[in-house]
Length: 213
Length: 385
Image 1 (cartoon, rainbow over the protein chains, first blue to last red):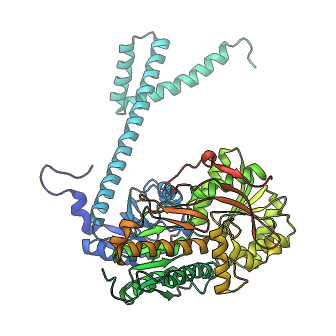
Image 2: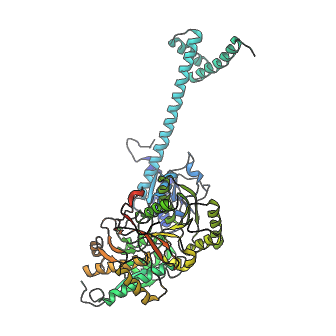
Image 3: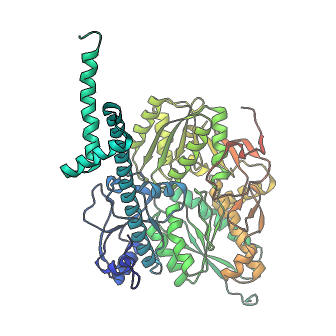
């Protein structure tokens, strides 16, 4: 969901003024350049250094300086599902640094020395990609849920067909009618059928067994 | 252009005279001075004196940055010779790029860099790390203990070394980093850990004053270089002098130059260096790069007749010089230098016995991610192991 309407400016662009940016960066020339340019753009900027295990504040976007002395530091917040998009600020381009950029799951990179030009595009692109990534993840989660539901219904149908001698079509009708009358989803009915069968199946088996305990 | 005016050409020199890396940087300063005096004795740059403007950045990156800008703006130099640690080079690069000046950097480093405004005359990892890994795996074994100073060069060097050792089925038993100003006690703790882990060899990327502390701590806990040597890319004659030959003897270094390199050019330069700075003064890889890069610069200045950086960059890449290590050449594409890898062991007098050397120079490849042990196919063995 990028907020792109048929006419008018993208939402990610219009939202820049309310964007809360957390700058995890030393107070040096790059840090000052970042703050100044982000403020020119109109974002709300808070800066702190060194990186901490906890994020000190809520944020919509994080800039993180990839300084060699902190590359091996564990940042639990960077692995969280709901972490805001991270833009890495790099001053080295060797594999050690690049691997650290991959580890924090950065969505964009800004190179040191930081220039004011290009930062706006990076911010917007990072937000756009992060939203696209998030909505894709939601979509995949929904699909997985639906797929699991379909598998349950198929299993419940088989149980009904075997135990009641129903056709596949009739088995599905039973599930759907039950769902309608109880006002629940067909997946929930299918779930109940499967669970009931597990319990009943277990009892039948023990009763019919050649040796009872 | 100004060939007829006898105004000197000023060049900035940024080597620390104080701070943790001052010993090796003093050596780089000497190499620069020796070359400049040779150049001036031979008539300078078409009659113009090559004048060195020295500043002491105290081994601190912020000072390098501030002094580089001062040199350019106040002393009006277009060229800076200097820097040792990567952090100091990184601090200077934005300045030389901003003012379109030139930095010539005579130190080995971790690679993965190119700037139009920098010439790199020290070794890239494909010119020292691969050779060291191959040698140590062949002669000592494959269980390595890694110890380094806390900055980017050791991290990246250890990444390369780990890959090479794992490729051979070896084992990294530990990896430790110490602050640049770590104390004797810190090194003693590391030495005890080494003893407990009992690796086949130690890979050290400790730099500066810590180097002497590491080797002394190693000796203090009673370890034997013949059985478990420290292998290094940075421990050179300067550090050995600082710690004493009896502490360093038996340990291994991979470098493109040692004072003991054979040949008439080196013999002459070492002799001159002693005359100039004293009999006890030793040369080393960083001294040599500082020396030959100053000559490469002088040749380029003569060729274009100006210190205009755009003009200099037309002729510096691709230029060659008969350096103490042998012929060297600046690569046109990546601004690094073709150099000659060597492996050596410290002897009783604190000098290096060269054990192996490449038959010719090796092209610098600063963006090589995946090194393989086969890279050094042109190795020649000088002395049986």
